[in-house]
Length: 515
Ligand code: XMP
Image (tube, rainbow, N blue to C red):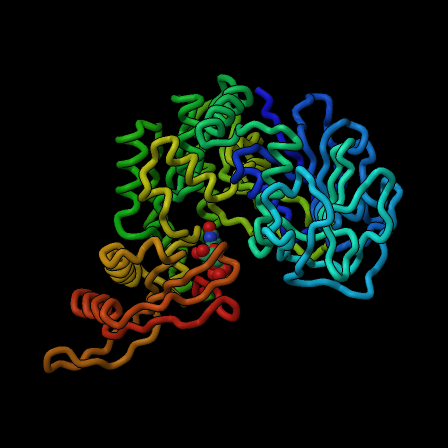
């Protein structure tokens, strides 16, 4: 099954992913392709092309690749910012550095009616849009006409309606552009004649079919962590190939309270997915004994995890594939253009070092999905909201929430404190307002008084943050009664903690985790 799709050609804009999101939000499947790659038009599945913005100048011909075939396919093309400038240049117009650079909100006015701008302008024929450019189109290519302009840009929206080529100087994909989504909607449905083909149900069916085609009757293993991505991956592969999937779940002893019990209950007992449970708790604690350095801790945990995973996967005969929960943002290839974007560092739970050594091929069923799409797919697959909307949890687990060396006693104390904190968030209806929350155990002891007795115990640090993607974060503003309740519960019920503090730093300068 080949889905009709919109191709987004990435010229390195920070908003390229956002364009893909908007198209998909409107229910149309889209894919991002680097400007350095050629599009395959032979399948006839490309029904529209969007050219992204980017930091380059259209005359930097050594750095900018533009496949001229795009303009000879009888397929509608929409250029955004740099994309608008490059189609103008390629079709014989002129682009120049402008005396007036435009960054931020700009008021534009309508010069002509267009299918693209239906329902976009206000009643007075104006609209506020978000610009970010220093170059601009100064001469239109042949057969193009001006649809909108601003005081400083003559050609804010242009079109060649016969060829269905459109150019927009501003960014319709950002929310600051009022009604920007209407432009994208008109391009998709009125100009490209797209049909909605990207609901969770369709995604599920497409992915299941792809897994079946890729894997056939071969066997697949999957490292299950209990988090959103690996849970959805396991569930959908199981739907596709049933018994030929085996999951391996390693209990590092560094998981949240009772997490291993929940994972076994869900996957083995409820979903009936073949699961190898490895209790490696003692091994991890032994290897981490007296290790203080955060990076050493991470490395020990990562390497041990891979070793255990490898050992148990060898026990299953004839495995050909390793399943991974790679997501779309991990795949985007725009980094080469600006040199400023770097790919995310993968945690050991993605077992990235394995396939080469074990000669396994990869199955990455959700590699074209964003995180929220993975969650929706999970719902479509019947996974519980508890699994799908859980706060992120780091691969090295509680080890990086106990600065310095760790031992079983510290881990047990922390599990209890964390459990109280998280349960209270649910009780006060705060859990889903927070991006991530956890308790940590600080390796400092302070004096307290309980009853008439002096205590000398550890400090528990609470952290709760709001964030979009974990790259930046702000601390969550709790009310006093919540903090008081949690603090009382922790100090009164957990032996080993006599003081609770709240982390009020943002990221940056701090990170979300302590190590
Ligand atoms: P930091 O501490 O870098 O955390 O601000 C950002 C987000 O990443 C998570 N995190 C990890 N996730 N393996 C993971 O799977 C890791 O090694 C790891 N380290 C940090 C962290 O929990 C937060 O959500």
